[in-house]
Length: 328
Image (cartoon, rainbow, N blue to C red; front, side):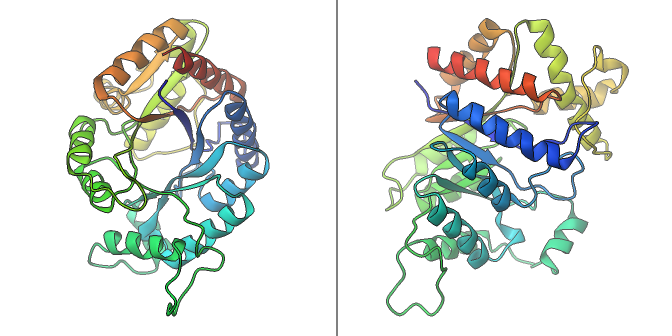
């Protein structure tokens, strides 16, 4: 069986608040733990009216405190927004509070628009320091050198597992060079998935962190009792993505029966291509679609994600997906 994990963006549904979204994330994580999901990851996004996980390390702590065994982590932290020492201290603290349960996925994008990126960073560095920042961060989490002048406390010696996230060949090459596990964001950017996985596997260099490649692919999922119900529920995410593409992001929309009445054909085609690495339908339909994706890409692990307006329907969707993954 391929290990399966869950990526949550802590979506804020229309008619609800950020407090509701954070409570929903806890309930979903508890359901994921009961359904034997391997990890529960949260993602850093800023200035997004429909996403409540901006302070990602705080939400991770909130979820970890409400669960017992599932690994909880970031999928991911957008490292250019932060000083590596600060992230090492945050995740070192999490690892101290919740030993052997914390993951740290690192992304190179800002996770927001450029105006917000400037507000986060105060100034924009002209060069790409991501590889050096990753090395610096890992250094803070490893055993400190005897003569270290700067230490992460807590953090030093916690050896929090670090992942490289990506949606292009850049992240694949970097993860392979550093000998780190790699997660590809195929749930919204599937175009380079095959090339990225091939590059990562072909150029991987064993390290003290990992002796062989470990590639995780993200797959969107929307499962329900019938194909028609699943397609109806999925319209919320399609609408949200269309509005984001059109420059009008908002809370997670309520589902609609006919999305073509609300989204222009060209935009809808773009949205469906971006979200095409997915499985939507009744249990048998989802099983067939997931089996095809797993056979084609042979991931070492999958991370499932999906935004549904009704929290109970979202939990049921991931329960069905877990049942399917156990059968595959």
